Image (cartoon, rainbow, N blue to C red):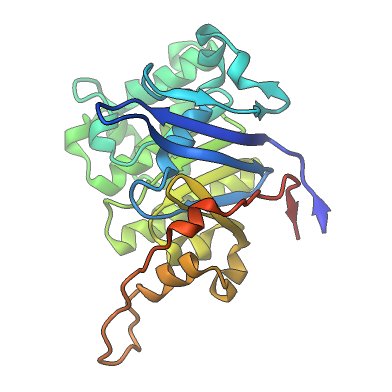
Length: 292
């Protein structure tokens, strides 16, 4: 077992949203750490997955109340940084791929200019240098005819290609950590696997850390090193991906039992039965990142 360099440490993170009916505690006292590895965060809608990812980059709306004992990246306290300092972290050090490229790409600017802008802003490069790196990045995400795609507008590309373009845009500044928020949920199965293969190759080649947020337990278990299971804003457990099917936690077992299987018979799929006692359990994710 080899201890990996820690990129990210989160300790006792809480996120509260005000509402007319009272405060909503979206994330409550969660802790985890990340090295140069792939961590999946899974759970039902509303479990706190996406807000956890966005809180790391402080991308939540101003009315959200974020508190934590620690959110540190490479030893730097992100909570203490000014907005100007955070803009130097976003993209350059930590990038985030959103769920649907249709809402993330600017419809009135070409693909090439949008990717080049990310390189120019973070690397202080010339337009020509940015274009050269953009074409290389489009090749890296396995887009054919990068010169042609460089000149296209977002509406002229398919959903799978749009997601590859988003990955290229987020990776061109060469960040140390990538947060991918359900990057394959809008894609068909074949394209999902292609996008995951690209992410896997690029993360491994660049020695990055990856937080992969998803609903798909099977997909995450085949792709990530460790999996954080969330329910009701809390972490239920953290398991090695290879050991996911050995989990004994009732929530994880319930999620797994709800998955349809090709070899299944005529039995009805299980219905997830939730227990409020899970929210009272005191769980702390291991603070030391270990990989084999």
